[in-house]
Length: 222
Image (cartoon, rainbow, N blue to C red; front, top):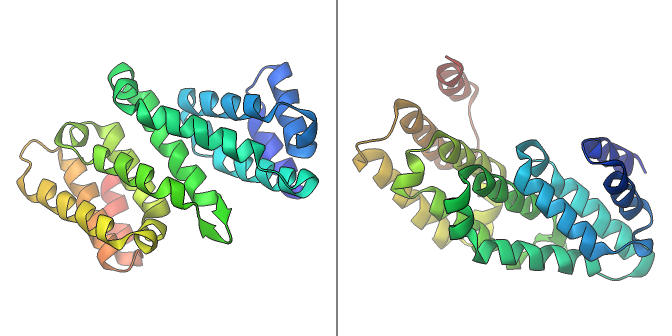
């Protein structure tokens, strides 16, 4: 119940009807349209950068509540279908709005971080998450501060989990990032700093020493 109460605090920005829908889904998931709930959460995540960073916990809580109440996975199925649809249309999304695209990547990584099947990350999300991160590593994306920030933040969050699921793709991604760091001449000094920090972070076993944190993040704050 404490987890539910903490998640409820995250939905105050919705209108009253939507707040009621989400609160009910968190506590009595069998009494609401869970496909509608999944759509509401995805749509808000695409609009709201702060919500996209937190919505995975809400999704996890609803999934747990539904499983306990009914033994079914209606919400999880609806969520994955909606995520897949947005994934298939990600090029159009990015062309329409870089902010929406960044919110989507943040949200799908957040969902990947929280959702588990038999205590393992969801296999169905591994390649879509990787594909999104590879897209953030394209030369055009690395020229945009918001996309570089998103790439680094998501690798900090789920990089280690992703590597355990598919180490070869992580090797490919970091080979690409090293090439971009060394050869892409139009990177900003901030982008170069963040990419170097990320390369060193992975090389250190997805850990950061106090000295490295002080060096990189004192530079970022300046």
